[in-house]
Amino acid sequence: MERNLPLFIAFRLLFNARYYYPVFAVMQLDYGLTMAQFAILNAVWAVSIVLLEVPSGALADRFGRKRMVVAASVLMIVEMAVIAFIPLGNSSLVFWAWVINRILSGAAEASASGADEALAYDSIPEDEQEARWPRVLARLMTLTSIAFVVAMLVGAAVYDLELVHRVLGWCGSDLTPAKDLVIRFPIYLTLVNAVAALAVTLAMREPTCHSTRPEDRTLWSGIFEAGRWVLRSPLVSGIILAALVHDSVVRLFLTLNSEYYRLIEIPEAAYGLIGALFAALGIATPHFARRLVESSRIEVNFAIVSVATFLGLLGASLAIPVYGVGMVVFFGVGFGFLNFFVSHYLNREVDSHHRATVLSFRGLALNLGFGIISLVYAAILGLVREPDLEGQEAFARSLWWLPGLFAVLFVVLFVFYLARVRPSCRNLNT
Image 1 (cartoon, helix red, strand yellow):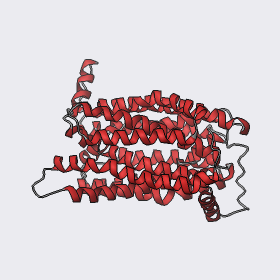
Image 2 (cartoon, helix red, strand yellow; image 1 turned 90 degrees about the horizontal axis):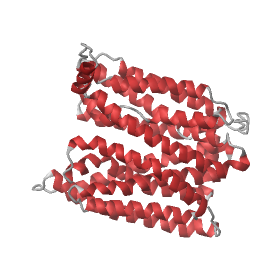
Image 3 (tube, helix red, strand yellow; image 1 turned 60 degrees about the vertical axis):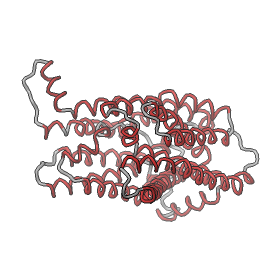
Image 4 (tube, helix red, strand yellow; image 1 turned 180 degrees about the vertical axis):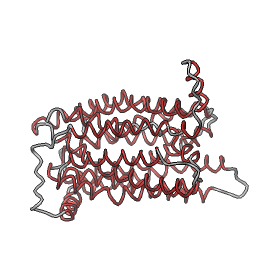
């Protein structure tokens, strides 16, 4: 089982560090899609994940975690191949190819969510899990940050037609690939990652401590059993609620970061570098997070995340020209700590037989939370927008609402903690 741990890390790196991330929106437009179609595709992706998240976790618990991560890799290969080889020029054909891509992408994300983490955690001897899992997480998050830096820089570079031509010229080549080919380079690289991810998952082994017992329960009974367990476990419910409260607001801001950079007068050429630096924060963050889970109480650790999130939102609302970019440090640290803490504490509390399902409930909660917060933010923009107000001014005003929105969510979380978590866990420890 020991080999599952490095294979799990390798799978996460290959599956998540996708070269098209820094140019995703621009690439879809270059494929011939419209902004309206881009919005529709995002909705298709989100709906796919929400519908498949929990059932995929239950399938992993019932039929095996390895089968689900292998399925995720296969889906990723097909997902990439659809848009890697689709001919351009027919806008209808291209749009439907992207619809298929988004559905397969959502299915792949859902298949991997929970199953890969459950497989890795249950590969550790039971008496060593609590001590060793933080070390695995620290290594994973450090390497993931490095992989994201590479993916951001390489993906943006290979998408630049002029840069590709210049590099080929420096190498003494007469090749001048057309734009229709160059815009697929990040997809080709990600397709290579997908094939490598499949090889990695095929080398995994199903943990011997995990018994699927298909005769004992149906798929839906497993889902309802895990759901009831979450609701009856105040600490687990509190951890998932804490993840939702912090993740939803931080993710909302991160989707707006390019508009924020423009507001604080950062040159567009620097956006990719800032994104790489943001990812680089994750290299150091896991080591501090590991020390915190080993030495501090759970309440203290989540309080640190709350403070970092609130200070980041408050600082961003000031929209300080140029220097306001420093606020990304708070989000980078807070987001890194949050992911580490949630994974550590959830896996510590959950039983093996429904671990993947419960972890899928976490993913479902985060995606629903992000969707709801996005709708709330759209309503906020409607409130602050006035006929004589420029788009940038309306956006600047909307930023002032984010610290208050987070404060309201935090109050809800704190009341839940006082009402349910604290009475049931008087002696919380690390």
